[in-house]
Length: 450
Image (cartoon, rainbow, N blue to C red):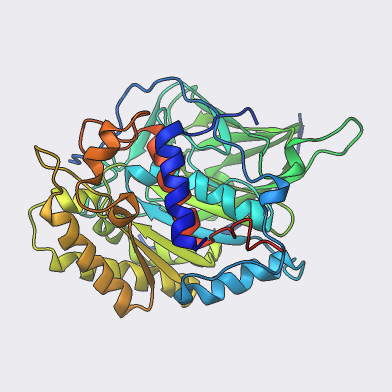
């Protein structure tokens, strides 16, 4: 059976049966690092969701390809495949291989991206959930569970804007949160179904984790951070005045058994997110999605601080999954080529010439079920950007089944697309995530396995 036939067979099965849902205080002084920094969306997720079922399990042991059998279907990503192979052969031990996945609400929901994360981590080892936002009530990530208490502000108030807001310093993920008096946030890393880390037996030491918090402390600001039994107090008076505009990085160590808690103490501290990784080689996929975003959204962030944040993170693969909001805009499609080219070049200023994968927009219907013509037009513009920058390109519309596929996914049982004509259902995002995973790292059929 060919890879394409294998994809089609999987899609038909998923459409017919749905997605499987089987269960799967001593204080310490810490040195903070610094990275230098100079001084209305129509796409939103619904405010209410049905109870979210657990994600489908990762590959079983007999489904995991032999260490020498990993396919390389996207030649533009050769350097990324090389790093995956190094991990799989035990030759990559310095740090995790990191994927930076930027996009709109389809990305921020993390249903689709987590299916790709699971596939990669099953093949190359789970190195943690990666980038996490803090203090957002509606935020979710498949790799962690959150509790948010009190009032938090976010800046920008409308994060999908394409014009500069205030000083434009929004770190790696494009949003900073400001806890108000008495506010706090706590999260725990979920045991990973893609790793034996979640299956600790009695007497086995908890898996170590590294927490790196990105923050800024204006004058008079202070907060406390706790990881397990370790507590750190940070105040603006402890930072040199010359560094007032800089994003600081606080490193803490913990385990899978520890929760992370940040508590407001005074003033208006600014929190840019936290990076959570296991202290060993493996794969991390950072979900950097913003509801309603276009590729131009990230271009409004202060360039030097964004480049510095990317340089510090050092991703090995950039994935850009924009286009849905561009489809509903009325501007000339040629501009979207330039937006993507500029964003790719900006990320590479910090990360070097890393491989890039551009994913075109999903299908979007007009009344009657046909596809909006701009879906194909935006896809062509994005493909042109990928070609100019030597990136791989995949059409999400084509993966869904091409012309009219959104209407067919809406009519499918179980339902795979919502009636809003923009978003998929949870099951639909997981189907599309599996199709993207098959595109990136397809699994061999049973006949092809050694």
